[in-house]
Amino acid sequence: MTSDVSNESSAYKAMKPHWALVRALLGGTEAMRAAGTLYLPQHARESEEAYRERLQRSFLFNYVESALGTLAEMPFTKPVTLADSAPEELHALVDDVDKQGNDVTTWARNAFSDGLANGLVHILVDFPTVDRTKVQTRADEEEAGVRPYFVHVTAESLLAAYATVEGGAQVLTHVRIRETVTRVSGFEEVAVERVRVLEREKWEVYEKEEKGAWTLVDGGVNTLGVIPLVTWYAGKPKGLMLIRPPLLSLAEKNLEHWQSSSDQRNILTITRFPILAASGVTDESPRGGGAELEGLDAEDREFLGKAGGRGGIAIGPHSLLTTSNPQGKFYYVEHAGAAIEAGAKDLERLEDQMAALSVELLVRRKSNTTATEKSINTGQSHSKLGAMARTFGDALELAFHFAARWMGVEVPDDKLKVSVHTDFGVEEGDAQGLEVLFKTRAAGDISRRAFLKELQRRGTLSADFDEELDADFLAEEGPRLGTVGRQPRDEPQPPQPGQEAQEDGGDQPAPGKPSSHAGGAS
Image (cartoon, rainbow, N blue to C red):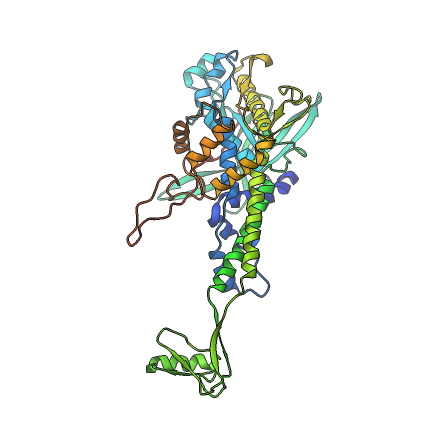
């Protein structure tokens, strides 16, 4: 029994605030509202009631979600391929790489999207626990359907990872992965928190008891001798499990837009209700303000008497304001509108900045070849996203090497190559036009079909990109977080009673994020 198996590493704690912001933004308006003052501060002297009203009037313009969906899709507009020279045993994994029916392209798209959002993602190459007295040979494994499979481990699931340097290479020595399993108890579902511990010699699974203690419930020998976990970094890491997520600057601007938009909506609400003022009115009436109201019944007069005691006057379409003072007058005071205009300009500025940041990863730039960019010719232009797709292919390649080790198959490095599409991007001179394209799509001013056609025309998408086939892929992945129940933008909604047309809504669907789980090495 242990009490600290769920402890988080210092790297995990440093990354948590970044992940929390991205997760909240991808959760949409509902998640941002639920975060409350964490992302929408309460103004000084603003009452709780006023803050709650302002929060409920705030809506998220989700640029991060739109940009992530588009960027994460580009490397997978063509299938991920395993070299023909790879062993047949590995090719047999391609069509169902996770034992859940997902081929390597679909699985990779989801993992890449997760890594692009959070800065890193992990591939655990797991192998089922088997009774070695019955399953002893490779033939026995094939007959029993026992084989390695890929597990998508999210950044937030990996609590800790430690490594040592051996022969100039970094080798993992300890990994802790958090997971949740759901068990049915009668007519109730019970979520059980677990932590899986992987080391080079063994694996263990701990479950959290009701009193908070952790109990060892499973374990065994790691016959592979190494921890079969591959970590893909979406950029240059700052250390083991440490990196600045590539979309963090966009997320921070989206947060700034959320706060500015909330203030703008609040001031519009205030200015839509002008204040009634009076001058030259004596304070003679017990109803307050010296005003005499005619044409009211007994109930109205009783209410008005109470309002007058507070210095207020009830105003309505059936009320008449009069005063005995010939110099007295009533009038409305309205906002001049300068603050509204300033707020609108601030929102436009933020939206322009978000458009620029969302395109940044696609801009092709020239650079010299380095040791880590062997596939790039000197002086050839490439985008940051293209470089990320290339390194993601390297991560998949390493994962297939682990799969080969599980099956006892020897594979020379030059025989195992995984290819991910990288031929996309926009030249620096075309970046401005692409920024405008991203902005108009995010604002809903053009359809998804027009957006994709423009990307294809500019060479950002391949010439053989099939929109209908891609739509089928999106439908298989399910709705993006925050879009459940909405109709796709390109499908008009039927008119509602009393309306000629219903405004369309909803964002384009994007890759669904599979639940993370980690099997035990055996």
